[in-house]
Amino acid sequence: MFENISSKIEKALHTLRGKGSITDINVAETVKEVRRALLDADVSFPVAKEFTDRVKKEAIGRNVIQSIEPGQLMVKIVHEELTKLMGSETVDINIKGSPAVVLVAGLQGSGKTTFCAKLAYHLKNKRARSVMLVAGDVYRPAAINQLQVLGEQVGVPVFSKIGENDPVKIADEALRDARLKGINVVIVDTAGRLAVDEQMMDEIARLKSSLNPQETLFVVDSMTGQDAVNTAKAFNERIDYDGVVLTKLDGDTRGGAALTIRHSVQKPIKFIGIGEKMDALDIFHPDRMASRILGMGDVVSLVERAQEQYDEQEARKIQKRLVRNEYNYEDFLSQIAQVKKMGNMKDLIGMIPGLGKLTKDVEIGDDAFVPIEAIIGSMTPYERRNPSCLNGSRKQRIAAGSGRTIQEVNRIVKQFEDTRKIMKSVSSKSGKMSIPRRRH
Image (cartoon, rainbow, N blue to C red):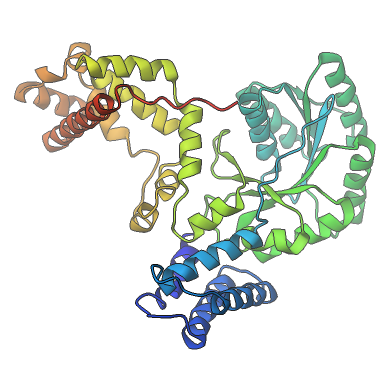
């Protein structure tokens, strides 16, 4: 996420490292490079200039504390200004109502239908709401099928009416059905439309007027860069939406849309799509995104993801096993499964300060755990439960059975032993393992 712009801004800020003080000359040189990095990321020139002018003004106006180097101060200023540019505050979705109606609009191919399902998953599993999806795209039969498949995947009912060509009538009927069934939230998927298509724009305006939704969200493909900002402006003029959703931020995006859409339309970014899985949806936090752009990581989001996936009962079981020196490969495999649920591996590594920069040119796929799982899977139940029994001949058999080398088996065995020692040490020092509680 934002690897290109991150490396360029970091390079720009590097010019101030080692300097004894902030001067007009070295600040001018730094902000010029920052502006160039923003333009390369498809940020419009007026926005890039306004941003760097503010950074320059702040930098020259600040007194450098003796304990802080000019480079560190500049990073702090750029972080503050990036946060302001992207909206400063996290803005939550409004789902108050009986039921609350969420209208989703955007261009064709922006990822609206997938986002609707992700939002349903998010509200159902993280907000404990009952949700109904409404298939309002009457022009593309595949869209109705897609929503039905996704609805089944996330365990949410989908309302559709084959043969009805007026999305307003479909949405109104869906709303009546939701009230009868006591559904908390109704999410209405709509057809993709171009801002220049007057007939389609009239239709979405009519939908909004009829439904009077608590929340209207505009979905943007972040890979379209500055074009996304222009489209967002055009849609906002017609339907005055409440917030923006950026999809495909896990792709090869230059970041221009994420950085400038809030500034351009004065509407908050509320969600970001970070992968294809149904749980790959994050609430947008401007300060955390600024940290990630500057290579500072995002530990808070990492901890939140861990809390969502952490099984307290399993943690207590592992704690007892550690105390009794019974921690085994089945426990190890269980923990790997929990880590995998947290999301894309490269994205997770990018949340750890410093590691994102070290791994930016390294391919880290979701199959990173495959060798470990294959090796443990080739062990007998007895071997998995009794790690100390693994002698040379057993390792040879495990290597042959998993299709891995004996060196790889030895490496996994060592990693397991190191993990066990560290966990036991932490457990004994604290008296008990700290188990994060899920937030509801």
